[in-house]
Image (cartoon, rainbow, N blue to C red; front, side):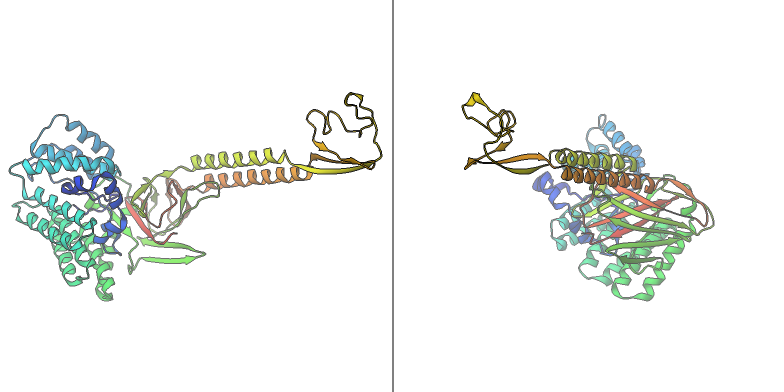
Length: 514
């Protein structure tokens, strides 16, 4: 499976094991711990990837029927890619062409998080591969790479490593290997090696990838910069500060040369997308924790983005929020949030959180707060107190209807023997005791005050949400802007936040949130 850069979610499935695990079992297997078993703990970029193309265009596998949907995937238009692939499936049947289209459909749905539909599709592709003659080594290699991923998820990293080596061997055997796919397979193998502690071999594989990326894209390409970051993270993990800082600095230099933070957003190829990531040991990042909140900071081209992630936005809602501050110390204006900011939950399960608009959240806060205040007023209006009265003598008033002689003055319709009576009495030795429920005006007043306090707090929270929401804007040189982004998920342990600035993306990772 290709390890690309900008994709929001990685989903790892295996054709040959779909029937074994089933849909519910697959859902249980899809945990970040499983996924990251093949990814260095310091390398978040390996967890998220987008396929540039599916490698099934004419010239690689002889089937170009998936070209349109592949191109849509290439620029991140997954919904359009899904629609194109689904439409194409109506007219193709069998062979490499159907394999190509189905794999494109799988990719499009995968990046949208539509995992439920994939096991059946993958099983179909596996069946097609087994009975289709002349399948290219590139295509076979991808199958083995997927098999390696699923074996790894199943908890057998030793076998996963061997299958990953088989996948790389198939890619290298092809007369026209897909370099991007080959680099992805090598990267997967390198992370498996790194996770088992084989750092030296892992570094050799990373360096092999760098050589391939250099030949394919040039030494000063973003693809090479991303690879240098992987190498720097591994060197930092090994305690090799000299190489780590050298490679980090070179990677940052390459990315800053693109001036992506100052350019207007436009769809671009995956290997050209510039990500500035919060990586341990990198020279352009810092972190601080105060009052239980961790804030991370990334600087590129003198543009600084700070972010903190809080799991509860307000007392009346269950949303999480990201607090963001952006300072433009660069030489040109920048476009803040030219596209949506992604929040990718890693634990307890991988999911792309949905961003909630501030006005919608404010209305929800108002609705819940007003409902709470309404019930406080209602129950407060029913508050009563007990009144006890002792009366000496026979009382006053004569009620001949009951043959009881002289009765207390409040006996009758309002008394214990009357209709709807709320008092009781005991008569003896000329004394009558009455207990009556009467309105408790002080309790009712306190309830009204509490209800008003809830309403006031609700209005303030709603107003704060509306005023603090961070939206698309142009930030002039020397200026700063800060605000909040809200999401529908709030119960998670780890997540990655991505803030688009111009044509670049600033990526933060937050751990131990609960």
